[in-house]
Length: 149
Image (cartoon, rainbow, N blue to C red):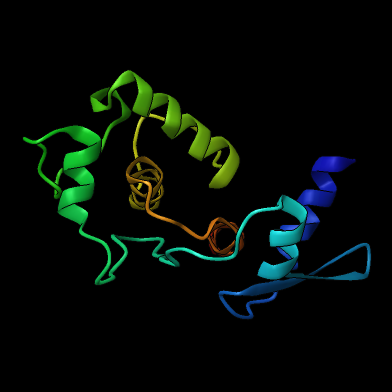
């Protein structure tokens, strides 16, 4: 079934680089590179390439305090936990889109992760972000999280 194939895909991911992944499904090797995703999705291969699964992305081009202010308002403090209930209605909708299509996750949508905030910030402010890079690294993160259990 489809869910079993997806599980097999993620279980067999080999850690390679932040630019690609290798896996096996039914003993067939699959190589997925950023350029392949660019072609499939018909999106550009440029923009910010930040990734950090645990905390804020560290980049000279990204200001986490400005990110929190843009998403949650002027009085928000970047060390606080970020909840969707504190987002405007439009940003809550954008958060759901990010969590469904770019960085999909299981479970609730009550909390905004650092990577979700980072992604939303780029989309809201019109700064380019490399979506294929995000997707490849999110796939690696899902593999790492599942294997940690």
